[in-house]
Image (cartoon, rainbow, N blue to C red):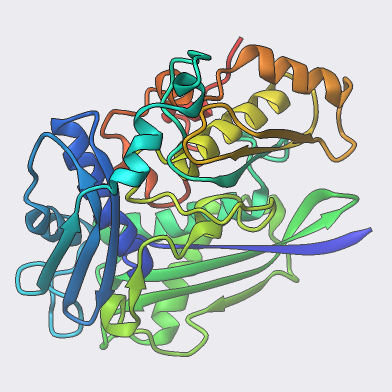
Length: 379
């Protein structure tokens, strides 16, 4: 049976991703100075104004405005009359400390308060988190989101290395893959929209994108005469970033995870320190799912973890291998419970999450990057 599945990615200059990057840059800046910092940083971007809010508790101080300006500069927004300018934009910071009602549950878990002595903080919130892996790509990610991320990253690379000197920071990519009997067989459609300088003509842009982005990323055996290409289909994309659309931290949660191929618990990642299980438990769920597939226990695996605020141990661990398992799912569940400490502190220590590592997670997916601890294959 043939079917089509589509995933999208965006470049780091997309207004939502600009906000994610600022929030993660603030988080890293605090963790560099104080690894025990509690950070929940949200960013809003609109026209020439950046608004940063949330809750931060730390023993150190950070110049948040300067961190934001540096992040905007790194992405490549220098103004030029049509974009936000890192030097002159307004940056408004409105921060408070973490609520003491939340802190009392995070600082000491309910289990420890009741004498169970699990040795962990409580979860920073209630919630459900999913992790997923599939053997259809080398990095054990679904092919549509893997290709979309690689195309978006390539689009940024040729801009930053000046291989194509007329591109702007903003851009979006969408890839539709044809599956036959649940196996990816070809790329059916590629949609790519990229910001550009006003003087460039569309035919030149289309040729450059086809030659220097698509053909450099997508394996030729996945492309055929029937593959459809929509490159800047509106015909013009000059105004981008916050000048083209407002941005908000946490609005690209499907881009950040599995491109819609797996379920999502609804929690965003960027700007959150690892006591927030929205982030840390989602990373752990991916690590477990990836290792289930890497161990050949299944060809596909989805893990759900669920937590209660203030409680250390998960209230639920769920495994689904979609009928691809080579051993009973009960054995996989037992392996998970015996192998991994799923308390917040257990996850933080196991994945080494109190380091300033989060800027490199922000763009082109939080999963599938080999240098991240949750992507490691265990023995």
